[in-house]
Length: 447
Ligand code: NAP
Image 1 (cartoon, rainbow, N blue to C red):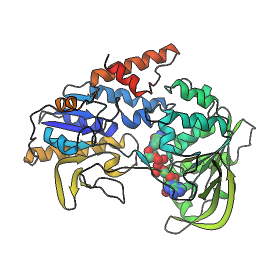
Image 2 (cartoon, rainbow, N blue to C red):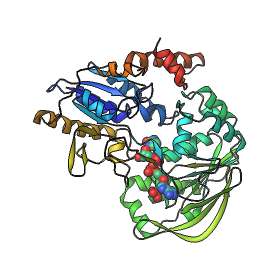
Image 3 (cartoon, rainbow, N blue to C red):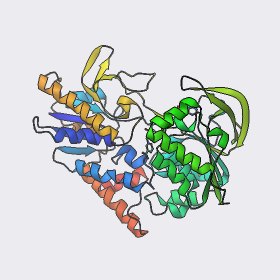
Image 4 (cartoon, rainbow, N blue to C red):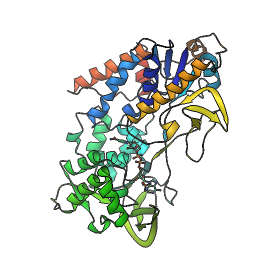
């Protein structure tokens, strides 16, 4: 059986691993990615200073080296090859292309210059080839106060990167131009805004705690915003993860301001209602909220204006549709039953989903393993039941791609980029430095 996996992030690689690790049905897997390099958000999402999480890439890399697995990078599904063509070349297709777009706030001023999506900022500091380098090189050295909207782990990553000294980051694989721009940043205040209370925040304690451990940043909380109402107190008592978050935040309330160079203002019950500015964002109008019995929030009408010349909207990712396939516009995922893509009540034979495009942008990297294994079980059950459509084309996919002038980066091409990144890092005493230019990656891959 031949299977195409679309997307080489954790769910794609875990799906490939599950397919080649069983011995009932011999399987060959091609992992296709639109970028010349694999690993999706492990490379372009996990914060570069989270070295142990980033080391997941070593585990994923071992899967690419397994017999029966090939990497086909720099291939854009929906542009270079359609999903229908994939189904004509493979017995099954597993879509694991994630959720690459940002969710919107839907408030006035959201598109002012200086207001950016966390997805774009994260892509930039991770060295994504499509990142807008000039934008951040212009914004960071000219900003003094940043507002980060949202209190999930991405918001915490963004806040930490903005508040760290460059000395706390220069051992990472961040490209040199990113380190140089962060060194030139003039930001002294970062305001992290949660629209609900500390008990409802989605960050995890380990990540949260790090904000209080930075060399040159004080953490400031407002005692009146961290008082728990009765349901929140019950939640903190029942759920240990919530209780730990609340303890960390309360601990900060008792800490004196030590006069460090930067301040992280961790705010709750505060939602942005408008971004103000002229040629660039200058402030955020924030409304105090109160929790409602159903777990939501409502505005109190009490307004405050926070000065901000950089606003990072970190309110979640969203998936996008792929031509010719059903899409749930409300949840921004591909509809499925147990990983089998469905169009209304009808199965789309041979088509499967795993990861964020299946369940939405939730969970940690490990969550995708169970998710991908579940999808592969459905696929293998369908193969056993003989319901997979037979591939119509005997032609290898690489011939089709070559006829269209696509410069496919294979596993050996990726290995060459990998080696070049390690060599580049070693020049400055680092383990690795990310190569961010697409042309350079292609050049190295082609030897
Ligand atoms: P997230 O955890 O869903 O956080 C989104 C945040 O945006 C929430 O605080 C949410 O508040 C807020 N929000 C949504 N709409 C809003 C609005 N209109 N106005 C104000 N606030 C709004 O998502 P994420 O931070 O993007 O992370 C995505 C996933 O990746 C998560 O599962 C996360 O744990 C994971 N991740 C993990 C790590 C790690 O393990 N180190 C690092 C990064 C990401 P409400 O709750 O009130 O909606």
